[in-house]
Length: 200
Image 1 (tube, one colour):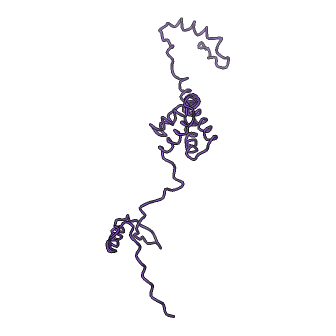
Image 2: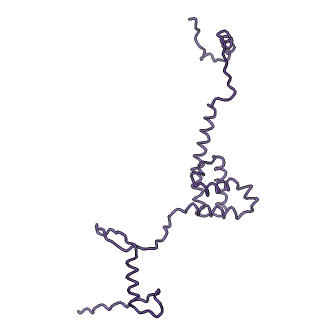
Image 3: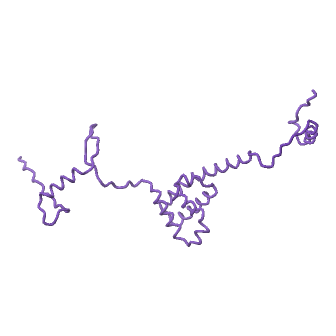
């Protein structure tokens, strides 16, 4: 069996060439385009090979949306409603949108738990009317921030209980007045906590 030599491939038409240009400039242009392409490393059979990399990369499907995309989606959803309705019924979500746009998620996390809880409920209401992936990302980000803010608010309120108030008065007295005051407290101390007598 004899094999016929492969037929040479006919060069394709260079779409970027001028209408009256000859084929040599097209070949030079292709070589220049190959040399200008970015290079990358690829592992094949345990060895590294230098390869030409693609200039244009498709955006991954599972890539999270950017902060500006989330703000644009939320803004479009809020503007779709009547302005009076939005100002009255969605004001917490509007606050979250404004802080998200200016300070990002750390700024939203610093907001109070009550505001975040209301904003989360309003975002879930919008998502129930017309679900979207971007709105789901906003809701998923708000949930842990709201829980953390509630815990922070509860901790801060407990710390307020231990702070000394402005109504504490300190004055000097003698031992006689102290004993009189101690006797007046005598009926208020539970029997199990009563102090042993000093005379014994």
